[in-house]
Image 1 (tube, rainbow, N blue to C red):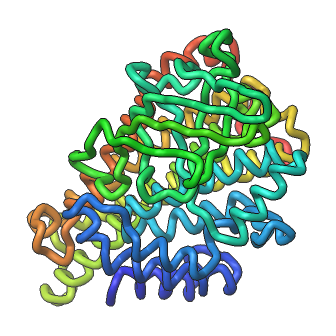
Image 2 (spheres, helix red, strand yellow):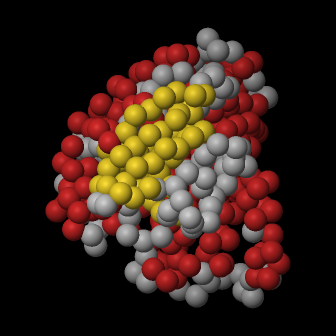
Image 3 (cartoon, rainbow, N blue to C red):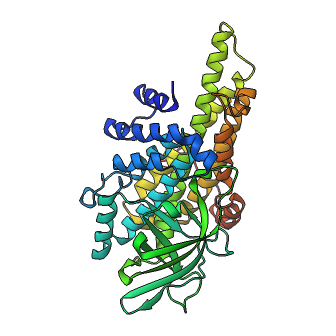
Length: 405
């Protein structure tokens, strides 16, 4: 049974309760992602086949309202897509996660603008793929600092940016980018702008030859864009960052990593069952690792589910998204989910033994293991832990073990 077929089997027996319409649309994209996952990894290329299917199933705008050409679904549904894709192709899942975070930023902070409403309708109608540029030059992953500035000339704007990382930039239909508000602004005084493919030119400056997540094609470019002043989001990036970029990015990344971990655990379980049948019911030495992997995955999925529900409940009152305790929990979610996912895949790897180590084995865990190791260095966990250290000291510890319901 293929990984894609296994995915549908799990859904049928209640592994992840979601509506049938969404699951039936996800399945063809999962099948395409699974079929070309090895080629995407080996060639370090964009997973075109999977995204052609995601577009055909109109899954690239599911969180947009129906009036904009979307489904009016929630971030929880986007997380389900990330999880399903992650089980078969990490790169496809991660690209989808980043894309949906960009869509959320534009929707949550631009919809009140008449021009942005037009942009959102175009995104939904054409099922556009959105990439982002939030890192620049030598600033590493410090997304709250920009060197390049938006230059205004009447109703027109321009931007010339040393975009050190633009994942799947060459394949994107549009790019959202941070920039200083003006040439006189401080690096932290940022805005977010949306540029469509016809608005910009990309000149590759950094290639992408890495150990895992090879299909994300996270290359560096010189990004030169021109557009209308209305293409700058009306709200400052500080608010966009707190209320949309960080929450949605961390939730969907975590869902993606949980999917990668689930795919590895699935292989471990299949391996243990096959060996057990061959040995007339006797369990192989790796069986305890498979049990630990299943437990670790259960804890990881529960963590993501809890964090997603917390975010959705706070969206009713956006000010609740600004609370220090919530912002801290989101940053720690990124750290916890990445570390738990790595641990889970490693346990699955131990369960499979040499069969998991081999690249030519049906139980190989090589690709998921290489891919999941990226999770702790995508915005390095050490940086996050340092940034939230003070708020953790101020926050103390919980007063009770059971939350009020």
